[in-house]
Length: 333
Ligand code: PEP
Ligand code: MN
Image (cartoon, rainbow, N blue to C red; front, side, top):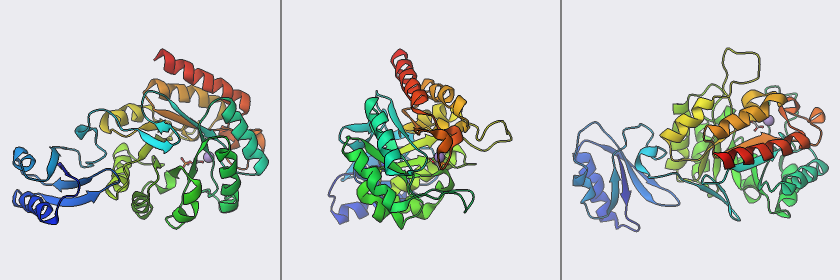
């Protein structure tokens, strides 16, 4: 059960509500986000929710049978949209496109990609400066130095930035440059990181874990929401299966299931989802057809020379073709 509390409620009234909930056999956890105050109540008793709804200070009360509560779609009419500022949103009628290199490599690389995005009216650029790599000897990103020129290139073109944050201690240094904090697949269940992002005032892009279930992804989102941050975007990026013909198995089912289970926007990452350049466009279109609110993919001026994930990265020509196809498909849908 989710109880929505009226704004600026005096402490005495809040404790009265908590007391009543306890009497009815429910354990409650208070949650305060940038948009409101809630009491999340867990319990087994069958109750008439009007007993709660009629209490002074209660704005609304919702019965939510899912174990994840605030991210469940069962208590909200319609879907949430996440704003990145400057009129850029994820969720809603328009498809949100995000593209950029796997890793930020040089000023020249960033400028050329930002030009490409601007030319095609793409409003969000991706690019990692802290890279989680399977091998410690692989390129691990340029860090804050890269972030600075990434930021300059995007700001002067009105492009918003999504980049990966790998640990809580990086939030503060990245904060001035980032519009959307990406939590990578290797960190989906890093609960300390999720808690810390929950306390921060910028939106979070939460990727599905490498072997993570849909339910685990929703629990991870619940961590961020319940720590105070409602601005969450979920991302299907492929999971590890027995199949070896490609890097990951993009789970198109997850798009439909997530759109049913949660009110949060859901996007697709076909680049990591399949891991092979020639298949990226087809998987991206499948995700859009399945109802994805956006697509994030990797693009580079010369993918063969990319310092990471070149094998799944599109060149400008392939990227332009994909953008046209996605927009066309969306208009048909
Ligand atoms: C990435 O976006 O480059 C990345 C490392 O993604 P994931 O966490 O999905 O592997
Ligand atoms: Mn990558």
